[in-house]
Length: 281
Image (cartoon, rainbow, N blue to C red; front, side, top):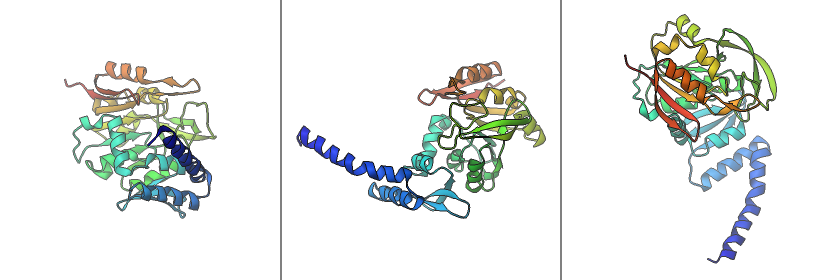
């Protein structure tokens, strides 16, 4: 095939697909879902997307496993290749294949969004041992359906036990207790120190703390000094997400964990994520 012919075909494809992508992105649910599902069939994927009008949440059905989400565009992107792919991608980004989980292990998922981490963990731990902290109300509603028997809290972790302003950005999953460059609304939301939480709930051992808080990670670690003594692994997200200036938190988190007896297991430079393990005495 000649170069000119390939270019002509590519132009035709773009002319055809551009309005379809526009409709998928901006049209009403019925049309958008139809287009997304048609694309899945044409590309050989079995999962499909729909909406539960009763709770006003979208969901993806993959081999009869239903997973809810609140933002349509974000959900289409996250689960484009199915739930298994999403589970493995997220786990690999945090280097979780380095951890040998057992059924009785307790995992705390801080900044759990739609509880996508559970898509990976459900193969290893009991559902009641999954603990999520998600300040976003829409995200928490999804979590409550995705991990029915989990311990799911619609609050944040932080340095203090108090009410804080929480800046909402649902479309990009960039909601934070630190004011970001873009947000749609501000709500009041409670934060609790992880130290307080483990004491009130008599938790004696935590296998993994996954920490993703859109720049609020330093405050969470400062409120977790006692908890660090009973945590075996900590997975951090330290990307440039803190505040209007989009500062990174990777340096602070790493130094803090080194100073409190943790050692680095691995780094995912693409995502600015890392896995740390408590040093053995």
